[in-house]
Amino acid sequence: MPIKSSAPRWSKGEKRLIVVTALALLLIPAVLSLKKAFTLDLNAVAFSPDGQTLLTAHRDTSVHRLDARTGATVEVLGPSRSANALAFAVSRDGKMMATQGRKSDIIEVRDTRSGAVIREFQAPIECWLTNAEFLPDGKTLLTQSGSIWLWDLATGKLKGEIKSNIGAFDQFHYIFSRDGRKSARIDNSFDVSRSQIALIERSTGRERVLLSPKSGTGGGDFSPDSQILATGGRDGAIRLWNTRTGRLHATLQSGAEVGRVLFSPDGAFLASLPTRFVKGPQIVRLWDARKGRLLHTLTHAARTPLSPSQIVGMAFSPDSKTLVTASTDNTLHRWDVRSGQERPFPS
Image (tube, rainbow, N blue to C red; front, side, top):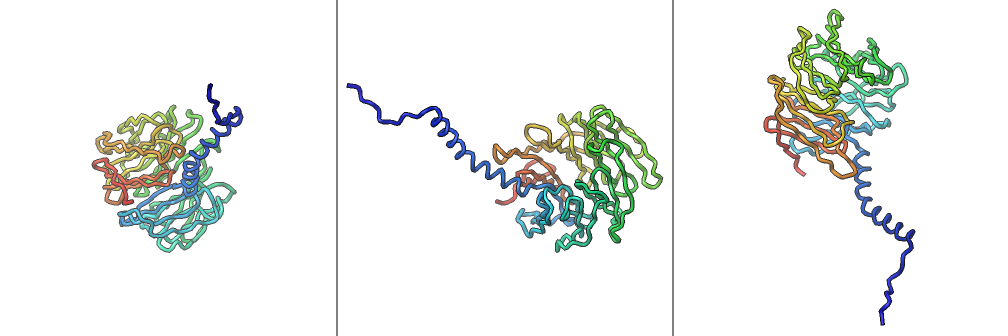
């Protein structure tokens, strides 16, 4: 006589509910990890001039001071009442930093050591400031949204405005050479036919258009001796320009859209970062800046399957021996520049 099973019979709806519940239990830890990662999203990283301290800026506008040797947090400054902060900069002498203020259209200049607010700079129009930079003269602060505003650090007064030549929703970068004698305007339009790179002599205001690439443009940086301007492109090319002649010096092929480039303090190395819209592994490429040769490919692995790592910042140590990269999964990675090997911070 056959034995009847006493196991309950589940309807299709009940089976579906069981599967959904099981999946939810499996995914909850990853979801919580994702939430935590994006709560304190790393947005930028910088070294102090002596190389002993790392400063990390987060989207809740807090700034963390870390021991550059161990990676241990020494102090947390902030946050202010703003959210989703994008702007962060450290002055060349390391005494001041610029961070998002209590509102999205305010930049606060703070004392780097105490975190005390020295002065506030509010944009002339209601906007979301996305960039701040201390100019080489040590007397001027740049803040940016759709336009760029130049401020006198001592008086807090507006010194001038630079307007974009492209659409209101397009991006443009305005960068300065280390000696302050040259600047570059990099227009990155959604309409690639309107993208261009212009080199500007600060003393005369003379402007030379270097390139109107059909492939679009990315970020840029001047070499420490101000002789070379490096620019990234949507076509994956990094172009090195002679700033004296305005001619193309060399082209490096990275194979992916280039969102940012950064020279090492000694000018020997160049780091390139893809845009945040590039799918797949996030990769930083390290180049020999003088020979135009790819040296190392540095890959960030995602911390969890649901929180893909997006590299949002990078900084060379003052001695050019170390590169630190920051990711949206709230992690820092430390790399030896010459060998390309990662040197993890102690856990």
